[in-house]
Image (cartoon, rainbow, N blue to C red):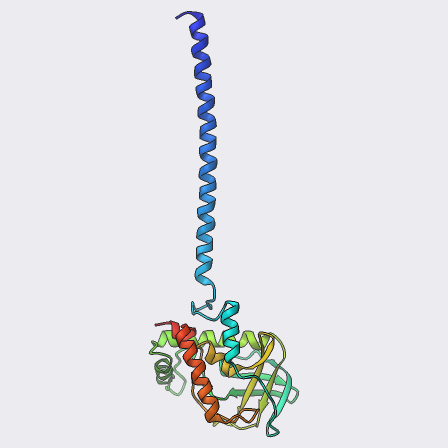
Length: 254
């Protein structure tokens, strides 16, 4: 092979190598872009699964339209009755006995324990007591009332209800409205709890029903605006039906 031909061949090989390197770099950059896009899509997909869900995987009103719809269905607070005492600026006390419908509260009158009217949130754990008795039957009854849940599912709702209430009550001062009516064990009193919700004041027991976290059960009472218990129960049933239709809380577990 002549020297001239060798030079030409060498140049051709060099050009081919350069073009190959350029193509490899381009191909790698394209793969990186596609990979990043896929990773971003996967992250969005995973995040999308969690939107509007509580720690136990339950669905709750999350979008602006859902929150407006729930708020629209709640009773506006009107404290027109003179038969109840209103305690302002109350704070939740950290206590092992707190759950979704009964909790220890610091008030201007000292430490009190209150129980919500109208609702019963599920037990947060299955327990056997020192006496040998347990809460299994109660959990079973709660599960039936909330759509036929298993014991484990029912206690999951109880955990979420407890978490939901703690978050609302820890957010700031809330109001307790009470007649100082004793619960059967006499160490607690029934009460309405009023909390800030979407910029307005709303009843905690209604929010629990609206989120599918409580059954309509236990003692009813005339509302602070003198609405009868019978009329208010009908409104609570409508709230419950909306939660069922929307699969909120317990109603989305089956």
